[in-house]
Image (tube, rainbow, N blue to C red; front, side, top):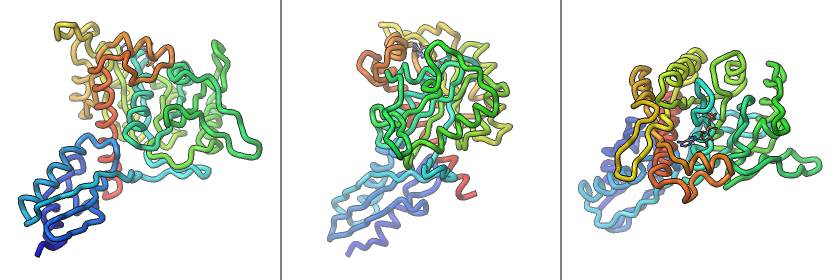
Length: 349
Ligand code: ADP
C-alpha cells in the first residue's frame, strides 16, 4: 500500500532551484492525502509570482509518478509569502519592502516600479506602491490618479486603490508643477507618516519608487525606509550605467541586498524581428555581470509604454506589444524569486 512517507521521500528529490533546497526540507508540502493510488497535496511557494511554478509542479508530478506506485497526482500550487524581517509599522505589516532605484532620472524607474507592482498584484500578491520620488512623482499620472480617496472621520486614511494595488505618492502632497524643496527631517517625517499613518494593512510586497540618484536625499530616504532588497534600473547608455553602478555601491554601503538590474529601453524591436540597439548594446547586462548581480530583465523600447505611462492606461493594456508585457511580467517574477532567495538566506543564516 502506498504511504505518505513514500510520497514525501519522492518529493524530497524535487528542488526549488531558487532556494537551492528540496521542497520537503523547505516545508513546502502541505495537506498530503493518499487514497489508494491517488495522491493529492499542496505546494506552498514563497511567492505567487514564482517564475518556476510550472516547472516545480511538473517535477513533483514526475517524481511521485516515477518513484511511487501512485497513478494519479493532484497538485494544488499555492503561495504564502514569508517575510525577511516582517516590518510592523503602526498596525501595518510589510513582508518584503523592495526599493526601485536608478542612478539618473528618465531611465524608466517609475515605469518599472508600476509594472513590478502591477505584475505581482496580477499574480495574486498583496501589493502596495509608494512613490517616494520627490523630484518627479510620476506614479499618480501613470496610474491616472491625482488625489487620495476621501478620508473617513476617526479612521486611518486609506491609500488609493488602483487595480488591486494600494498606492501612495509624495505627489499627493504637492500641487502639480510646484516643486517642493524638501529638507532632510521633513522628508523623513513625510515618509514615516506614509508608512505608519495610512491603512496599508498586511502587504506581501511594498514597492518603493525611489528618488533617482545617489546624493544625500537618496541616502536619507533609503535609511528611513525598511528596505529588504533593491532593484536598479538603467538604460544601456554609458552615462546611465555609470550612475547605476554608483546606486549599487550606495545600497551595498547600506547593507541592502541588490536583487538585480533591469535594463530598460534595451532595444527597439523591428517588424522583421531585428533589434536596433539605439542606446548601445547590453550596457545593463554587462553591469550586472561586473557587479555580480542578477539581470532581472531587458525591457524593449515600446512607444505604447511611453504613451501609456503618460496618460494613465494600465501598464499591461493591449496598446503595449506582447513582447513588452512578457518582458515586464518576467522581470517581476524574477524580482520576486530574488527577494524570496534573499529572505530565505537571511532566515536560515
Ligand atoms: P524615471 O522614473 O526613471 O524618471 P519614467 O518611468 O518616468 O522614468 O520614464 C521616463 C519616460 O520614458 C516616460 O515618459 C515613460 O513613459 C517612458 N518610458 C519608460 N520606459 C520606456 C520604454 N521601455 N519604452 C518607451 N518609453 C518608455
